[in-house]
Length: 159
Ligand code: ADP
Image 1 (cartoon, protein in one colour):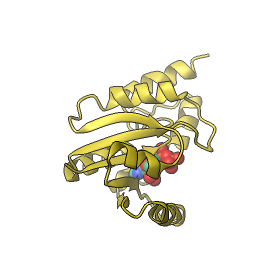
Image 2: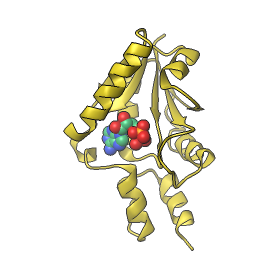
Image 3: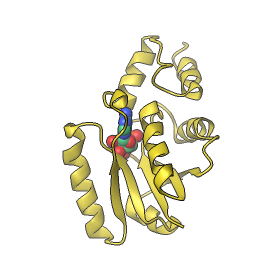
């Protein structure tokens, strides 16, 4: 039974993330979407809110589970018995950072493989920062994020 983790900030989850999750679920028996608890980024949504949005958005995905972690991604992968780490590559601009992370993680734990998946082209320009900015100015983001996220963004920026 091959299990992988898909770690990230998910602030919030977008349809680009979901595209990657679907692709991973076609390849592996279980995909654990796991939220980093202490990212270096400042987040709009709390860890609980991000987990809640992920759970709601992914409730119909049989092979997908939502989790969170503190500390190193490779340690978390080992703890849950994952064989690999899924990451999404949108453009060449993602490559440099992802390449460094993948090599460092391989150095830290050679048994854990980083697997890069590319989303459909229509998601290559999508990221959580753009969504937060659009929502802040009351722009409609329903083409880019699941309904649970649309609702939560409206709540967040309603006052
Ligand atoms: P992180 O802070 O770890 O980069 P993110 O939540 O921004 O967390 O992204 C998690 C993963 O999903 C990363 O590998 C990122 O490249 C990928 N990703 C983000 N947005 C998209 C998208 N629109 N299409 C495909 N992959 C994406």
